[in-house]
Length: 108
Image 1: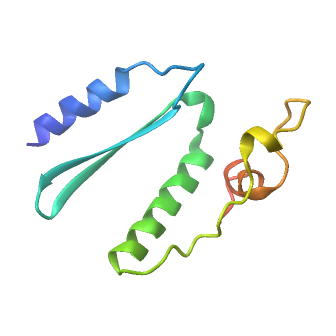
Image 2: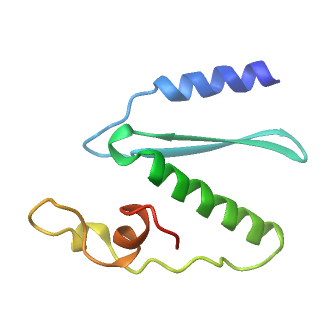
């Protein structure tokens, strides 16, 4: 089974991204058994770095733990809409979770 997961992970890793239409982040859940799963996450390098990857993993772990305990999401709701909040000079995004979390690598 592990060999099959590795093959699928390699196939996903080399699958090209559509930079014009996206998505630039893909996720797949592989069910190995009734109680065993593997999450494959593939991101294009233009949207990720070590800091942002850490934010994604912390938030995914937080959500998994909450949902596994039948609890609601403990994460702050992100109210910004990236396409409408991008500033015109190309230097980033204004307000919302994007700037405070993803762009800076901060929590929530």
